[in-house]
Length: 401
Ligand SMILES: Cc1cc2nc3c(=O)[nH]c(=O)nc-3n(C[C@H](O)[C@H](O)[C@H](O)COP(=O)(O)OP(=O)(O)OC[C@H]3O[C@@H](n4cnc5c(N)ncnc54)[C@H](O)[C@@H]3O)c2cc1C
Image (cartoon, rainbow, N blue to C red):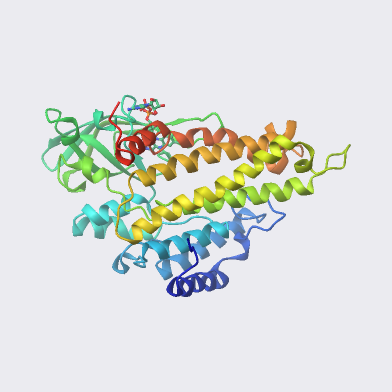
């Protein structure tokens, strides 16, 4: 199998490289000796913020802030393979990911011209920050059982209920959500997809703190919240099918596959430099078992990339990946947990320390933090069990359990 670029792809890759050479700010470049996970090397926060603005502006001007979108909405209309090359380069350069939220693609497919004009340009300009209101305390994997009610009252829906695990709701100024508009209909058929600002009366956000101390998600409560009917995307009561739309230009996970390989490179370089005080050996030379485990992680990095390539090659041929995307998701997320386990093992007793400011925490405690934070990756976006069900039934034709 030849994975080399075609002549056209090689030309596009050169274009991406020269764009980076011209526009990617030095302040965001991560050097070998920097903390590779500090999102942009050791620069002062002010300098970093300025560099981020500059980088964002360059991406907006080129249309690469929303590479898959049509040009009239600020995109670049790139083909799946071109998006793949762009995402691969972004990951290889450890460039911060800046883009538009997935809800934009949903609005692009199902929205009215008025909704497109209202909601898409502020996404490109970076003025809106969205959160996703799907899950509820009693509805996760079985999402279609959701209970948050929206009752029509004139030109508005009045929404009451609760969402949970709403990532970034405490920072968001917009929400896209699924609500039940017809409780009598079969459960997939009585759901509507709504958009709302977060600063309207009746929305309350309560943070949930994760075991890694991160404050990423929230409980979101709705009490008599009025949302204009014109903010329903697609047909009323057909929101389930709207919510299932993913024109995700990052579905191949190539960014994460290349990023995971880079993490392993960084860890290897660190472990080769670090020497045991007594034996003078590098940590990678000391014990066989973790060393062999490390080799396994490298093999898996290659598998992860190949799975991503499969998804992207399907998209390039106009096919919609289904169980193939589930395979990529299961593998990439379980792989990130294995990387975290191997790394903390290789770092020995210090590997469990995660105080960024302690001189004893290897690489600023990044690996121990990763150990905790990757636990949720096999739950978010559909659990590994659900993905395996998809692979078993749709991929292998096995009967439902
Ligand atoms: C980091 C993170 C971020 C998230 N962000 C958001 C967000 O922004 N917005 C949002 O709406 N939601 C978000 N979620 C919620 C996420 O979508 C749900 O947690 C997920 O869908 C699982 O639902 P649940 O937690 O209710 O678990 P449940 O569905 O109750 O599942 C519990 C267990 O049972 C298993 N299980 C359930 N059904 C089956 C089945 N049919 N066959 C086999 N096993 C099954 C599951 O795999 C799991 O192990 C986030 C979750 C995480 C971890």
